[in-house]
Image 1: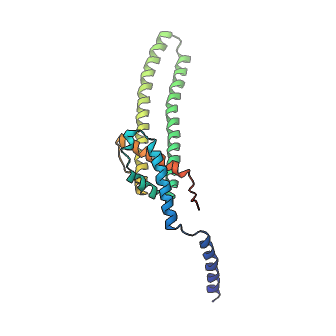
Image 2 (image 1 turned 90 degrees about the vertical axis):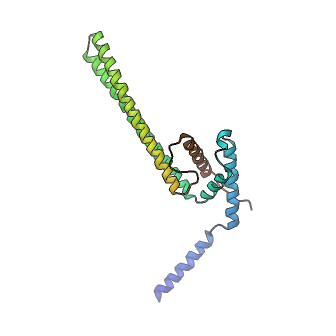
Image 3 (image 1 turned 180 degrees about the vertical axis):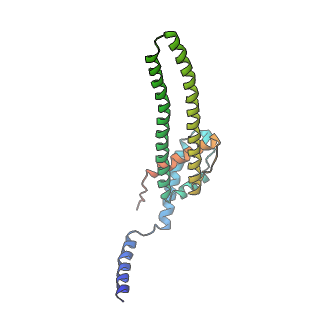
Length: 194
């Protein structure tokens, strides 16, 4: 019986907490959706006309409904942080290729004293370096393409409208604008007028 009393008292305290953090009313949610749609329409109007026609008001409304779940903001911010970390890593990777070339050139300059021979060796090294740089850039592009696919898939699974895995550059551009819209909405605070 003592256990039941303790549980009952715990319920009493938690019900007070529930009163403080009630679920939003349908009216509140509807007003918030209108607010979000208005913001999205403003962002939409800032786009070039050819892109405006590719993003319908229905899609904007679906996006507004989706971001009512603020967990979407958390997902988008986490994806952005992951992307930035990946980009930093890829920049370091490319810089390493550049640094290796500069070190190798310095080593040859200190070893070879004959200007003609040095010029020939540096020319061969430049060709080798260019090939290595092209390979490195291709790898970077592959990694970035995979990152885009992963982000598209994650956002699609999270139920964010307009996101699906595609390699079509025009569709990716639309998705980038939608992502920008979501990030801009995440910085806003909805304050209903009373």
